[in-house]
Image (cartoon, rainbow, N blue to C red; front, side, top):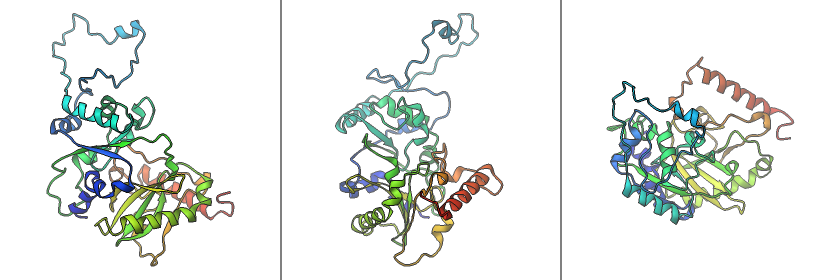
Length: 332
């Protein structure tokens, strides 16, 4: 893998070319001071928000319990409290963009979204209505360490661990978005060879019934909108199929181990497949459901070596999936 191919998958690089077939997005260059804030270790401190927003709801209402968190006057701890950072210009720009996009967005950096920190929000997802909520998700995420510190680790021509500039993409939030209708597409030698259901933790019988139709829609979208426009030879891209059969481009990802292959394995995808044949994999039955893989670290940082816990777990899951797929009652 080359740095050039990884860079093409940054949202600020591909979105301008594909915005007409993608989700409405506004992109901001991130000040280096904010990048350092996201990268630094130490106590979890949210910035001072000039708009007076509070990203963390008050969790202590019992005054007796609250006393436990106070430092007594006789305490020997004379250290000064760490001052909260502030990013007023950046905050105002983000606030304006959220308003422009209808009042709710989901954030991502150059490559990754903070999916592992969705549990921190009051809604349990990536929906943000303020700069404070965006900051909370970004600061709480471990998966963003990949973007911040390890973006080029798999590149043979790596000269740096991170890009010179980071960007924050704010993507319009759609309340009618159904995760089971998102699909990851695998392109090898500029040819679509595989499609996988993106949400592997859900069984939806309707998808099985519409499988052929979905394959045709996605293949047509690829041929018309992606194949001759995205310059890499090997890559993946995610799409969302709306109820009206309109297909929307969600993201691009490198052809690399840190991109989740979902219902495939990278070994499957490396094999020579027949010309013009697309493997389309979906969860075929309730028993074939796999756990959600919104791990706290990128896929290549998991210990999946032979004998590891993840190796045993994924092997058993894959075996169960194959059994269910071969069952005469599969999909019933």
